[in-house]
Image (cartoon, rainbow, N blue to C red; front, side):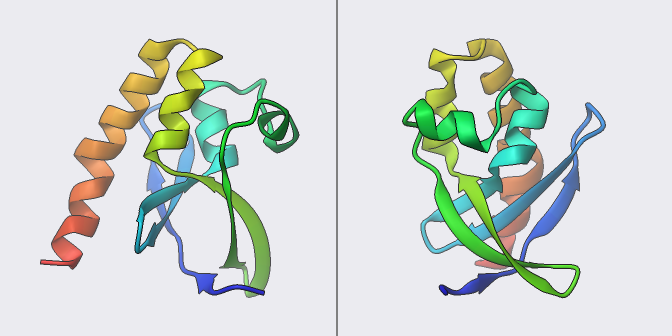
Length: 108
């Protein structure tokens, strides 16, 4: 088993929760949370078939270590080939404006 990551939750304006981990390579967002916002018809199994690069991470959820899939900015951006680009752009803009500054202050 790899490193256990701590995640943070953020409320998205569409009413969904977005869970984020901060890795040395940048922010990663739980795949299922991204899909809930930009493409509810997608899921973890379909993303593997589409060759979108996701990471597998271990996080503690309700005192249990769970393996989850995450997407970084590049992987989310690559969803534009299957989801309306406008939806992806709005989501990434929200992450840049609302979430990323919180983590940037942490490293200043």
